[in-house]
Image 1 (cartoon, rainbow, N blue to C red):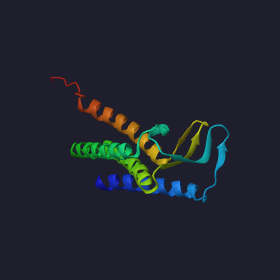
Image 2: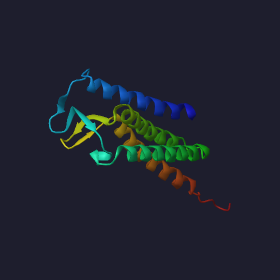
Image 3: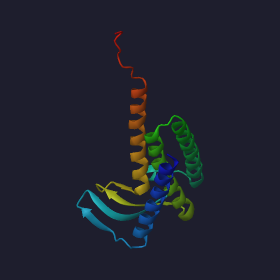
Length: 155
């Protein structure tokens, strides 16, 4: 299980940072891929989710707290032998670390995927979102199967 957790975190960070810099340095050029639905663009996000205006120091503190909560959640899921929860939280942690590294190095998070001409995101944001969905689904599954008691006949 630790190998998969490490791979989820490290791969997410590497892939996220690679694509951020590939777009930022024009190795991948800005273009519209699906008209009105998907484009590659450049955006410096100085705020929080959706460019929500909040101070740099507050964002750093919130990120460190979020990472601490993730480590706690991963530890508990690991102790309970809940592989899918550990993996899902690993992707959330990888996405959070990717954006954290970007913010510390540059002072902002670089977003480059434009969705429906309204939202600009990056690989880290996708990993965080899918990781949260995966965690909720696997947590629900584990809770449902743990409480399941098959009917037994007294025969």
